[in-house]
Image (tube, rainbow, N blue to C red; front, side):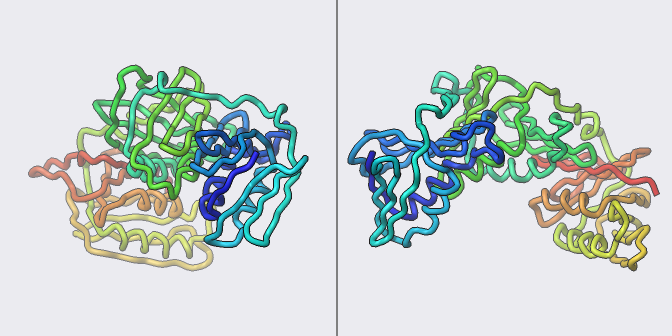
Length: 380
């Protein structure tokens, strides 16, 4: 095997291709990256038995071939090569030689025949398409709310549902929840709801970063979900666990009280209060009354802080204790200069919407926004 490639393109392609390397390989050869060179160019692939990633790149292929080398080592080598130089990669006996100018790295080959077959989805499995940037923004925004508790796989999932021409992304760690709608070109033959591991979707975003892609194809065969761009394909397993019913949390005909404030100012206030709070939950109290919103620390032995800003307030006064860290994460999901906080009558729950309120006389409606987040309160 022999091919030539620019150093920056090699580093970027290898970094993307190794994004599915297992942290602790059960089979030694899966610690390797599969490198395939043919008339179509070069493909770098990794596989951890839950997810497979392939990055394809155009290259000057002098000799076709298929080899496996240590993925982490090749990624390190590619990142250390001289900048803005051509690179020649070729097999030399039982080694892979990587040359750039006077710099030469030699990496031992692994047994390519032992590398497992990669899961593959084709055009016949296409079920729809998405704008790549919108999907990346939404997946990062909502995926941050997924639980990291591996004992609860249903909460470690990113829930993806097709609904009225939108793809609806949801995630929850049982204390906070986020949902976002983005436009979806529905092929009509796919599932209406699937759950995939949130880390796998975030790995997709890492793999396609920097490629300037415009769209993402969604592929599905009943057991595996594929996300494909012009240069990168990631195939991941679909979770069998049922995602919690979050509609009962997010659905509300109206609010008892709401307050609209600057997102940046409130985020800074919560961060300041959380920095002082030293209890297990970094507890702060959020109060709205008399066209003002205040944030104060609770239960802290280290000290206290109190902040107040003007607010567009509708309804009676309300107060709710919250986990400052989780509240700050909810605010990070609101990509708007203003955030509206909604309080429901008799519920220990706070919901966040981008933009202003939906008020008609004495009725405080729920804003119809593409993004919504919610956080459970703490009993004082």
